[in-house]
Amino acid sequence: MPSRPTQAVVPDACDVDPPVPGWRFNFIAGFVPLAAGLLMLMATWVGVTHPDSAWWIGSGTLDFTFGGLSSAGPAAGSWVQVVGSVGGVNVAAAAVAVSVVAWFGLRAGRRWAWWFLLFSLLWVGLHDAVAATAFFAQTGAPLMLMPYTYCVLMIVGLVRSRRAVFSRDVQEKIPAE
Image 1 (cartoon, rainbow, N blue to C red):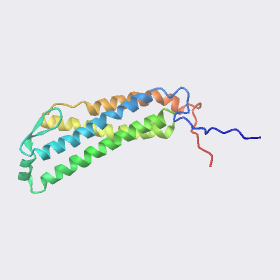
Image 2 (spheres, one colour; image 1 turned 30 degrees about the horizontal axis):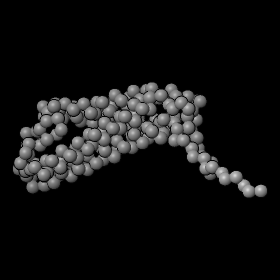
Image 3 (cartoon, helix red, strand yellow; image 1 turned 90 degrees about the vertical axis):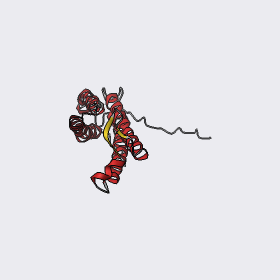
Image 4 (cartoon, rainbow, N blue to C red; image 1 turned 45 degrees about the horizontal axis):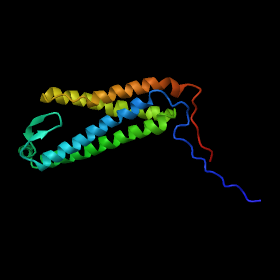
């Protein structure tokens, strides 16, 4: 007797039905630093490729040029270029991680995802909000709301998901080996 073909069982990324409430706030929050990181990278490239123009920061300009940085020292331009490029790329990469963890971890009620997102809020979000506040207070540049938007979205998502993630009904599922 011929055997029937078997169908592969593909587990859903979200094995909690319905998904954990609030996870979308954290997922969307990841797009805020993604935009900020790409803006930082673009602002650095614009500053380097237009060395005689005022340094553009997305919401306005600062009172110096990339070409004028050499007055601070011969390596000042290189330092600003590497910090802007590396910082922009790393902020964007961390943002992607937040959205991926929210989609595949928090949505399914994984405790490790909740803790990772809390870490991202504290390490990245609060640090950036404090640094942005100090920067804008010292330079008078227009205030960018991205760090604060990120923090608010992350807090709302974490607060809304906390009860579902840490309740006894949602258990960490460890695959059998």
